[in-house]
Image 1: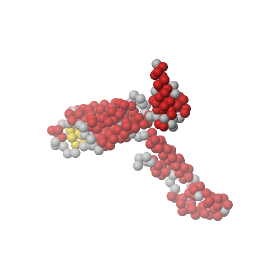
Image 2: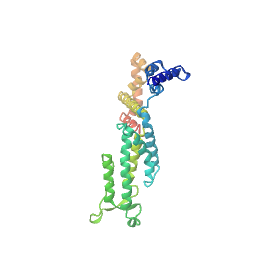
Image 3: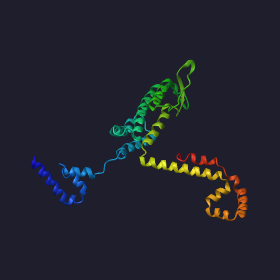
Image 4: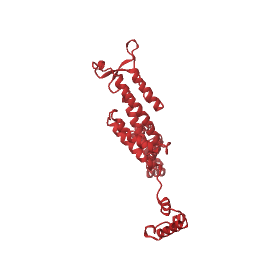
Length: 283
């Protein structure tokens, strides 16, 4: 036992004096001098720890990749392979970061994706190919079956994400005609893609968007304040030199105000400010 400790101490001494560890922080060396694995101890102190955001980066990347593939129109017959990167990355981190946005969005998207696959299978079985053959711009389905997939999707989502209904046919039959592009699956795809895209946003980007939102709110509020001042007072606020001149020359400023207000007064519309900023993040 004593020989092992001696050997360890000797190895530590060699490392401390060797060129490879000449730059080791003395405080770190002091903490590790009695450790059995001196090299491992030093690495533990000097290797940057992996942050949660770093560990979630692969999951965010997978979500972004899968969202792009689904957007391009991947057939659900082949989409199990398409969605697999999200499932694989989620399995690695969901236990460690259950409260993170990326994990929550990936979990939700996975549940909804499973419903989509079932809905695709139900849609195939619910279609009346013989009756659809004679229709233009629409197909005939057993719509009660389609409604089941809608209910399952809304249940997995936790809210009424899809408002899809149908009108029963003659004698209360559940057979109905559905226009192209208005099947339940057509509404499910964009929702899953949106959720994947939301989960792929990094914390830095979220912070940046929040900062932009606050900046836009402050700018909108300032615009409203200036607008309510009226044309002349707004001009004074925006031009400090003119404001000083107006204070020093009240009579001349009064005449200038009359002329300016007559010219610009009808152009002020404070209500339009809300419209200008309402779609700030939708462009």
